[in-house]
Length: 407
Image (cartoon, rainbow, N blue to C red):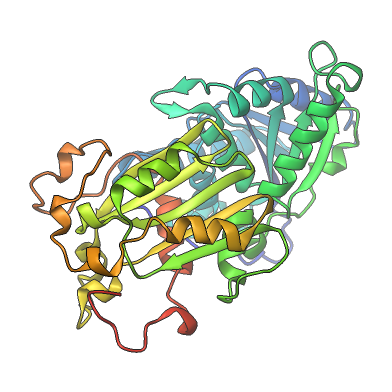
């Protein structure tokens, strides 16, 4: 299972200056190549190296991820051996998994010790095309190898240091699409409030905005996404005023039919949702809910609850099952939204019934029909799943005083 690996900036070897690496992510046709050409041409004082299109994708089980890490490091090693440079830009493929990039530099000492002290991850940049974002986010998203383009784009936004919004002078200039452009800016900054934000039509900003910035930081980059910040800040209180983020946590399962109805009527002002769900009719399976914008919501199996506690079995396994979802949006009425979610939980009477008889409109997951050996689903990126397990440890206020299968 993939895990989030804390970034360790290697100790600098005395007398050396590691080459800072800027990684440029983004979907196809959003202006990544144009950005890089602009950076190179406007930095005559720097010897800028460029690596194109490494396949930084991830597959379940880690085998492909390990291979791509090694391939990237070998490419970097070969390049800096033959090119004396002051900084390096890596243009990632559109289906790049940003976590693979982080892991590549985090495991430098283990994978390629000869590069320790010679390179360091400096800046993660995500280029967003305004026109494509609007088409994918608001309308039907395009598919890329089974993934929604907008979901992949948002994952890159959530794990970056600099967001560059390319408005495009032909399609999405301020005069013709100003209101939409402002809305996109608000959405991106809400999803990733920590990142530096640049809006441009022709990349006419100083190269120092994205080269040799020193912005990459273990804590702030990995925890920068708004939904992760919501989890870390959660104290169990229900805000009275509208909020931009909140965390919902309950130790009682959802009724499948009522939850499905709520998902069908998911409010547009919820920009991003991420978390785990306990569904009564599928009581052995931990379910992942991941939503991006009004057009993309995935409700997919994450694994068996029992698999999470193989090393330390709790006295009451049922007490270890719970729903926890982080929500990010525009002026969320916390009390009203929590009330809607609570209305989907099992009632006291339903808690005493046979849950397998509850009406369940969700799709059948063939890999979980037999309830045999626990197997993780390949539907979700491992880094998101692992992060939830790391930071969503039940805080003291959320743990029932007397755990019971009915709560």
